[in-house]
Each structure stands twice: as structure tokens, then as C-alpha cells.
Length: 356
Image 1 (cartoon, rainbow, N blue to C red):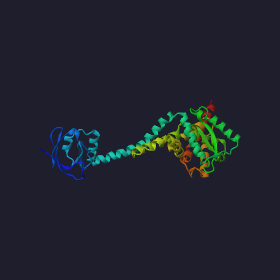
Image 2 (image 1 turned 180 degrees about the vertical axis):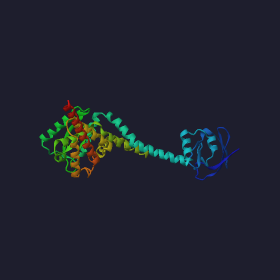
Image 3 (image 1 turned 120 degrees about the vertical axis):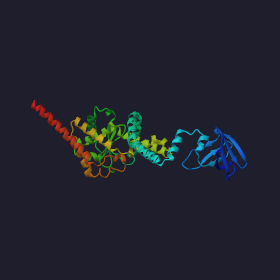
Image 4 (image 1 turned 60 degrees about the vertical axis):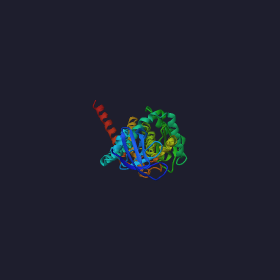
């Protein structure tokens, strides 16, 4: 009868003694040590999972355990491994499979962060109740007001004129009811504008001063309205918060996930827009400007002026939410192309009418 050698520890002393294990009948195990033999029911014995070439451990009822080298007989005498454990055992004995599984895991994690999280945020953002959006927005603005923003110094008539123009330009949009325009003095940030999840658009006095005409300001506001229509700010904050949760689970530290509702305003302020979000907001602005009788070239002009002023190139401030408009000749060219396309279409319509 086949016996497996090992070392027995009685649980009372750290000293081990030689031992042998055999199975005289299915479901029965016999442990032979110097003091004699002890018989056990296999269901009362716990076998440790196999980990590479490490020794296996048998734990017996009543205390004590036996360490021995792995043998296929152990799995025959003590069946019942889970499929997961069997799969792990199979992987550990095949280096190529381990490398392939590791590569697949890395690709999967990257794909989840790059594709999965944005998709989840896009689906979840419309489900966030308006009161929650207002709370997040108010807390984020309070954070900015306490550090970077000051009360506006623009005259009331000037503010009211821009607010009316903004209202006229965004009238009829699906989410127009939530849009409103406010102003802040921001010498440390410079020319800028941003929109909060509840639809409050904040424009700095410095941007109003920089613009040559209201059409340029409306171009920037149309861009921010695009962010609001697509819920970009909230989606970005949700992505960041979900990333914190996932990383916490991956590294076994979920202690901070309970405070996500408190940290969302901070994540909103610190999270810049992605390139895709900026592109979507730009395209929205071009369409909206053209629909209201303005030229998208106004967007190119103000972007060029902000670049020349140095505010875009230097990042527009120390936090991500206010530095999310990257310097991009491509964006300026896209605005000019949209303006040229609109002009060509107008000329074509005029030619057709003249021909009639």
C-alpha cells in the first residue's frame, strides 16, 4: 500500500516528527507516527490549496497538522477541490499560461479604465437627481470661491446684457432650463469659463475684458453649454470616483469609498475634461453658433487670443477643472473649417435663389 512521508506537528510543540500517511479505503486516512496510528474520516481533514511546489498541509480534527510534498494521491484521497482551485493549480504549473493570463488581465484592466468607466459614467450621469447635481455644484463653487475666485467687478448692465444674450442663444436646448450665467473676478486664473453639473456657467471678468466682441464670448459660452448638454463634468467626476473604488478593491483598501459623496465636489474641481469631451463640446458650439446666426470663426478668434495671451499655454490655473482647455491649433482650425463650411453653404443657397 502506498504511503506518503511527511512531518507531523501535534499543535502543542513546535517540534515535528516523521510521519506517514496512507488510505486503506475510500474516504479513510491513516496517520502513522512514533506513538502509533490514528485513523480519520477524509471529510474531517482539511487539505491546503496547491501553490506551485510548496508543501501541502493537512489539518486534522482535534488539532495538529501534517506537512508533506505534493502528490497526485492527495487529490485522490481528498477530492472536492473547487473548479477555481483546479484552474489556479493548472495555471501555476504552466508558465506560458501564467504569462498569457497576466497579459490578459493587464489588457482587461486597461480596457476597463479606458472604455468601461467612461461608458458607465455616461449611463449613470443622467440618473443623478437634480438636487444631487445642485449640491455637488454648490460645494464645488464654494471651494473655488474660497481659494481662486472673487466677486465680479463687472457693472450690472454689462452682466445682464451677456446673460440675456446667453439665454437667447441657448433657448430651445434640451437642458436649457438649467443653464444660467454668473461672473467672478479671477486675477490668479485669468480668462476662463466653466460650467458646473447643475448648469451654472461661470465666466471670469478677465475673459470679458479679453474678448473683442460679444460674439467671441458667446462662442465660449456655447462651448460650455455643450459640456452641460453632454454632462461632461459630472461624467468625469463619476469616472474618477469609480476609479478610486476599483483601485481600492484591487489593492484591498476600501476604507475611503464611504466618503465618495463628500469627495465628489473635489473630484469635479480637480478633473479636467478628456480630449473627446472637448471635441464634442467644440462641435456642439459650432452647430449652435451657426443655428443662431453666429460664425464659428468667433471661437477661433477667442481661442487664438487666449493662446496669444498665454493663459491657455500656461494651463489657465492650478487645478484641472480650470485648465481643461488645452492649447490646440487643431481646435482653432476646426472652428475655421466650420465657419468656412457655413459660408459656403450660405453662398450656395444665395446662388440658387439668384438663379430662380
